[in-house]
Image (tube, rainbow, N blue to C red; front, top):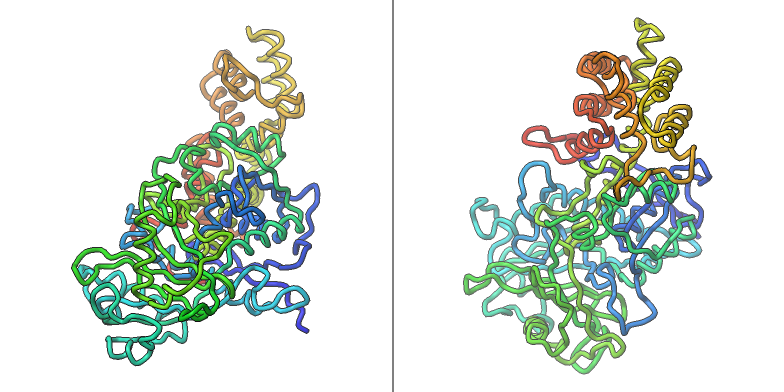
Length: 618
């Protein structure tokens, strides 16, 4: 028997500089973890967080996942998390959740092309995973993965090219993407072709009041989310992840404390709808949905289904937006029938008797009459949930405001499993980029290469980049502290901080006591604030004050910025141009907190503005 345990995750064209890497289905991470390994906190226990955790662990990065609630697979009387309720049928974006599932928020945010890149990364991953075969894996069954035919139907011509202004353009554009990127697509250009392909005893070819005019079929991964989430939770724990049930609040305020408490290097926010309160994101909103769970077994005139059927929301025969018909074999035993799409409705009060649920079932029965003879799953016949949308599409980006390494991965709407692998790879790429910038590795390497700079000049630039102090600067600052008028208790603490100063201020502060931050007037103020006040009150000249402020803040004056930019551009450092460009952007954007500059430069590369779009595929 084959012993393949690995699947390759390929980068998208939007994560320039990223390389393909492998994840493993085996218990041990592909790279050993130890006390010196990087450590990332992930907030959120759904699919978006677990996929990031899997990738980080196999890259040799330790992971702790904090979640208010986890997937429930043992008790069907309680609500489940969003990742479980999902139909989890792979669709080329935009999915079937409506005519405007993907917004157009403008430059700098995810577009439909980002969604399709992420979807194809996920599609290719699932198809390769289905080939894994060893003592424990076969055809993706451990992950709850199956591959089926997906049949889609349209009331208009979705096959022939048309103007962007045409109401049918979105569906044609989606078909063109499927035809280009997925092999083996069956096309039905007219109602005669549909009638020839599909038996009238299976589907009603005039469902919804008129004949379907076009359609197509392609292979599509389907995930049994109950099984998948249980599997992913077990897998990341076996690989070394720590899972902790904890509700996190106000992440921008508490994030630095979390990093300190857990001795972590970065945080990934994968909280879905929770991001609305967690990071005060007013763009986040719910879209309520529901499905009926049907026994996928022969029952009177109903027969077991192997294929999935979808009539996406579109302009119907009456010229009005139609409702979705969604019929998906979740596994051999259960069929999901949906769907309901209700934006900005977060009330979880639907029942099988609710009028919209009955209408949903009637639509499905009109499309596939044999469903009216099917039986419902006794222990869990009905499920409802809230899809996490945002007004600016899925947010996979570095936080540009908080000043510490925080990466967001939320707002997937109804496409969490469709684009989840791709967005996870993007989030992991951002994490690695921020941590590399946090270490200042690239910029310090450029400084070290300068053969025409004196050692003193190199030290000055290195100190400014690292936010550290040279021996002379330490001595001078200690004298100023001693001569200042601050309280003696504060003087002692400031002296200890200066004496133990390291590349990251917070580590120096931590060395001299268990409490990293000092509580002043109910506000958390770090030692940097007090040191800057000492500098301001000193009798140094303005040039000396600027030098110390730059060293304390880990920032650069305008002159140093310009000189370092020239050196980065002219450097013979053997690095890709994309990496050189990012270093240039980081220096140009440099602020008191390096992370803010790094976050903006990273986001600008992934979500390019206007013509600055990366065309090359890796």
